[in-house]
Length: 230
Image (cartoon, rainbow, N blue to C red; front, side, top):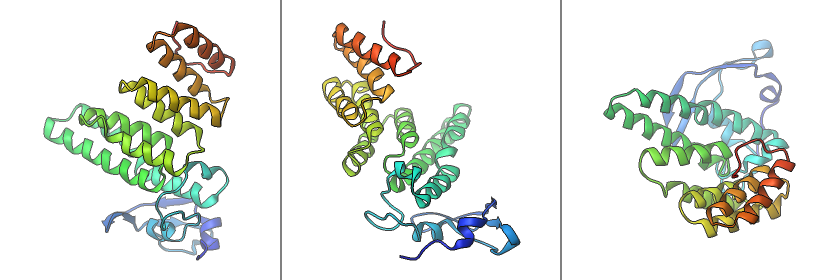
């Protein structure tokens, strides 16, 4: 597989983007400012086609959490977040004050951006969470299920996506399945703070106060600072 050129590894300091859209995804023709001005343009498509760690085809289905040790994935996260994930919250803010016809357009754009992100980084935690929020706004509460199932089936040993899926199930009145999913998450990472906290809420919902108290105490001991059931 072709490697990313050395000037990309060393040189990009700032990218001024002129957006264009072709084929299945967005392709940019930006003008990077490089050390020495070596390169006059570069595209996201070039980067995605030359990325390593390629489980099922170039540019798709990558593990977000490999970004901590894989420079290619780290750069992919940067590109996807800058042009897609990070655009969702501003779009939703605009939708709040927009007339109904424009509001729907903002929602659909948010869904497209999140789908783009989750096609490339299937277990991107913030994109998964935002997908839940947008799905509620467009009255499609089952939409995130598809993305969660793909995330946990492709990378089952990642604790946070398992926990997020569990919480999603609990929020959608599938409490027993959600609890089992949260237990899987804690089996992978026993120190996952939100896993303990969400289990506490789940057991509270199920009327099991002793277990709710137990997991709330564990969450606090691990440093969780969010709200917990009384």
